Length: 84
Image (cartoon, rainbow, N blue to C red; front, top):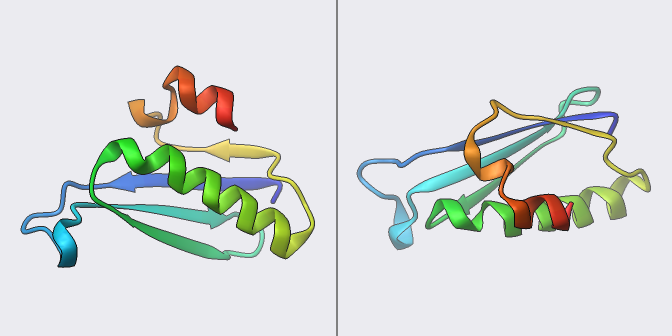
């Protein structure tokens, strides 16, 4: 959990089951432990990351220290900053 890479991909055309058009990938740099969340819209990225953070902390007993992304806007919203 020293470094976690995150990426939000989409929109996927055509949408996948349930009208979902995005997926968010989380990868731990050291262990390559990966997690994917299927999302209907970009604004669900914050909730997906919060879920991942709780799950990763519970499974590893370690806190995420650094997050690396491709610097796309969904990770820099004010509300995301307050929830991390």
